[in-house]
Length: 199
Image (cartoon, rainbow, N blue to C red; front, side):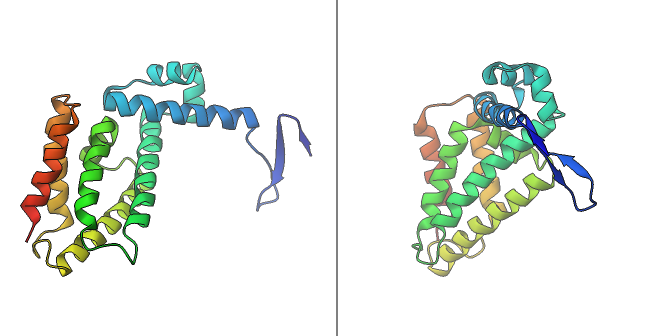
């Protein structure tokens, strides 16, 4: 049985379960999209009220979909990691070049320049299992690119993913704290990172 607002489905336990109404699903997506934009601009200092204003909904609508600010942050961070993971899946393919790592370093640095929240959260740690799983996938693919470059003799054999994380997040964090938006110092960061790990 259903009506124009939603529909019912029978769960595994035989209990009728209410499916989300179409407008509720749209509101959730609107809030999620607004949060992506607002947190990218403002980082962890962004507020739920600012997200609600960008989404053109009330604070209550935000909290109906994401019970806490941490839930909202997890949604945004997981989306960022998942999208970056898809890029890595495409770039770190079987026929990718041995020098793919240099391009990936430059690209992730540019992504950090454009998205303050991603940098803030990756420095802070995982919020929940969803974010942890998405981060693990990114780490695995980036490590694959690193190891490929090492086998080709392009990168020092003793360099680890943790080393790369320390170099990139440390320097990127300083640039972000200084509110550096000019692409030039960020490109220099990528160049310095590559120079530091080259064989």
